[in-house]
Image (cartoon, rainbow, N blue to C red; front, side, top):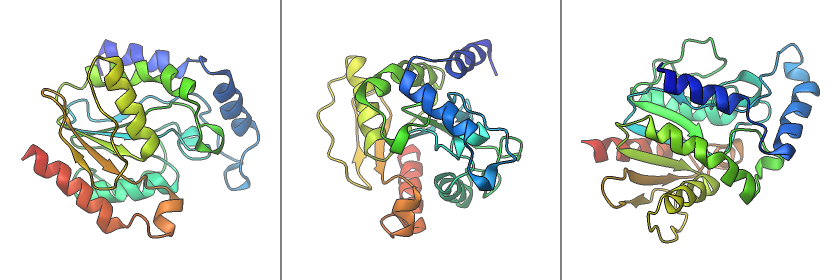
Length: 226
């Protein structure tokens, strides 16, 4: 990891720009779920995770309160992470099918995972200002990922956050209707944008998002690169 990545991670981890989110993530750390009472929760903002030479950038909403906020790694320790990691493994983009804790040996191949908000928000509902506070971190991660060819937005908030970032950077991006499976070509040299339902328990347990649907989105991403 370069000094630029190290500096960025340090700034993210020590950020306290959003008092509501800081208070919530720290409260969750103190009042743990019974199933995780022996865990030492991470309880801080989260940097992205993955391959610095990634061609695929996956953007989610935020760390889950008892998932990544507990384990200290994006998409790790909850149902969303389990679903996404299994799909990446099926596609040959992860070396193992599970994402359980920071020391489990998971490696992503050509993939980088991040989020528009770095702290767990109450009810998974960050405010617009909280999203805006976090967007500079996403911008800096993208600047350090020169090989990205495809961006996969997981969920409507991730899609709108990424669009907000592009507009901040002077890219005229019209409103993008949220539709699972959408492929949105953006002006070169921007990566192609793909849209998916978020792999939350709410979506996977109701059948709104199936493993086959997620596999198809990842196949679309790989076809773009080919």
